[in-house]
Amino acid sequence: MFWNRFRFPRTVKFRIAAFYAVVFTVSSLCSFLLVYWSQYSSLIFEADRTLNDFLHRFETAYLTGGEFKPTCRILEPAALSGEIREEIFRKLPGSDPLFAFREESGEKGGRCFISCVSADSLYLFEWKEASSTLSFRDVPLFQRIALLKHLLIEESYGEGQDRLFFLLISPEGRVLARSPIRETYFSLFEQQFNRLPEADFLSMTARENGRALRLSCRRLFDGNWLMTGYNLKRIDRNMKSLALLFAVVELLLLLTGSLTGWLLAKHFTRGVDRVRRTATMIASGDFSLRVAHGNEGEEIDNLVDSFNTMTGNTERLFRELKTISDDIAHDLRTPVTRLRGMAELAISRGRETELAYDVAEECGNMLSMINTMLEITKAESGICSEARENVNLSELLSGVVELFSSVAEDGNVSLELHLPDQPVFLFCPKVSLQRVFANLLDNALKFTPSGGSVTVSLAKSLTSVILTVEDTGCGISYEDRQHVFERFYRADSSRSLPGNGLGLSLVDAVVKSCRGTIRLKSRPGKGSCFTVLLPLAGSESEPETVSP
Image 1 (cartoon, rainbow, N blue to C red):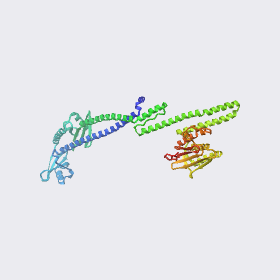
Image 2: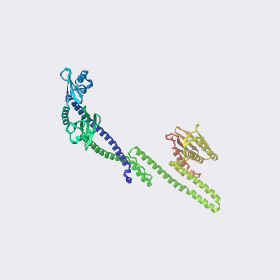
Image 3: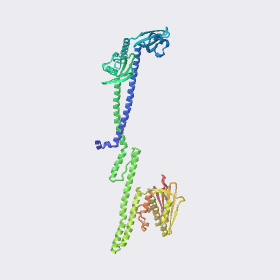
């Protein structure tokens, strides 16, 4: 898409700010809708309660001809005494009591009023308890309408002419009485009247051309409809003001929040930018660069540490490769020169067969040296293809000692092996560790003169396996001990002996790859002692140290 051509939308800072903006907008919109609906429902509920109160007052006045006062006590028609009910039925057979109330007075017993319907006519009975007499009169429709007109106008002006509206409508839709209503609102009443169901009570909202009314309609006993309307203009205006206020506040908060999200993302991605810039410079060839720590958080610090560790390993690997190249160029020059001289001499003397054997032997030595250097480099860089397994070190060491026993006998050197009573197991690369044992033992036998001794011992502590190879040879000087584990390094005392100076380098690399350590203790003319400590499988603690 077209925005993919721009880098800005693809940045983490933009995505975090956009994500924050979307989440904030959706959550705040949901909250606003909840508040808006709750507020609107509350206002409509209050309007309905006001309309229902007026409906009840108007209906009471309509049924009692204005006799009912707020001080009167409403009675249930079914709760009237049998004497009163008999008198009502005797005077007006077939009447149906609709409404009853009691008026307290100073006279004994007071008075009861009962509204009854008979043949669609309304009658008001008056029962005087002091004299136990019952009288009644009819309340004609014109009187009820006149009374209701007066109340409608009075209440309409009292509550606000543009706020509350009242109508009395016949079943045929003819207006019998109404409060002062503008024609624009009166049309809403007429439209809703045609939609009135068969139910006796209904509340609804009518809207047209920007006008809105909340209506409550009640069917009276004679079929006429009493309709009350509450003008929702003020409520709608308040709700629009609330929505506008929310939109303004939402926009301000959205802009502020997005800017805040952008700044926070920019702050916390500074570490990533530092890593990127450093990686770009490292890609140009400077592997000595490292990323500095900031205060962006633990996750960024962990990223910086991992990147620096990776860069350090890469730098060491390239340095090792360069060293190998230099070493190979330096150390292969001598055997190649020797091969060339041997070949020229053999050709001049006609000894091609002897030349072939010598060339094969020298090539084998060079190949062995190259392979050893590659193994050292792999071990030092952590690139090791050999699988680890649970190795019985007692059995492995016994095999190595047995292999070199003939060499010790030929050199008249005493070779001793000390193993613990129980086998010692270690999770490690078997072949590599076997070469470690073999190189240490070969080195000890090589530098131990006739009549000397070499002692090999294996022990186990709580956290480590300890291998010791001790000889009574020529020993190593302090200056040589500082370089004895370097590749191709050979002390002056060993230059006359066969070897290429890679054995101890391989031992040191393999031991370190197994998270172990190697120590050397030596005195010139007295002998040397190599001690290897390897952590046991499953042990997370550091191996024990050996004093020099």
